[in-house]
Image 1 (cartoon, one colour):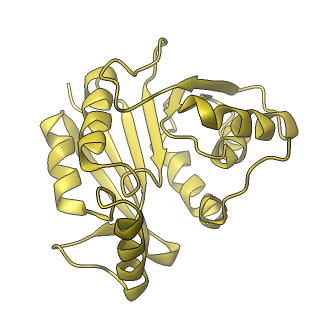
Image 2: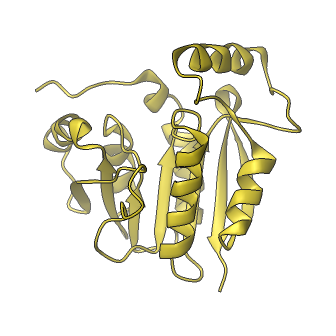
Image 3: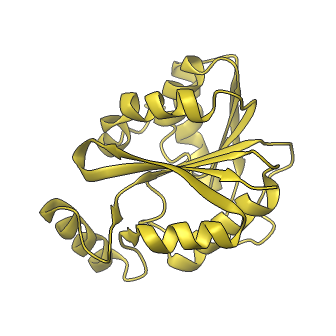
Length: 199
C-alpha cells in the first residue's frame, strides 16, 4: 500500500518538532490522538528517541498509518490503537505522561473537542504535557484571510467543524486541570499550544 499523503501534515513538521523537543523533554510515553495519515508519527518518533510514540485513530485510518510505519520504521514507534472520541471510554490501555494532537480541533465537532480535552485531563498524571497544533481564532477574530476562507470551507463541508477560539480552548483545558504553559506561533497562521496537567 502506498502511504497516504497530506500536505497540511507535512507543512510545519520541523517547527512543531522544535516545540516538542522542549515540551516533551521529560516525557516517556506519548499518545498521539488522531494520527491521521501517520506522517507525523514517522517524523517525530525517530527524532524524539527518548520516548515511545503511540499512534491512534479510527480503525479505518490504521492501514495508512501502518503503511508509513512499514516505510519508515522506528524502534520507539507503536502501531495504532483505536481512539474514537465519540466513545467516553476511548482512552487506550497503557500509561501515558503526554498527549499530542494535530489538526483535529477544527475538524471534529466541539463536543468531541470537549471529550478529548476531558479525557486528557483525567488520564494524564500531574506534570503531564498536552500539545495541540492547529489554527485558532483570537478574541473571536480570524488571524488571517486564509484562515477565514479555510473556516468557511470547513463549515460548508461540515457545519459542526471550524476553527476554534483560543480563549475557549484554554478555558476548557483549565476546567480539566490543564494549564497553558506556552502559545507558539507557527508558519501559515497556525499555533502550537502546550498545556501541563496540574496536581
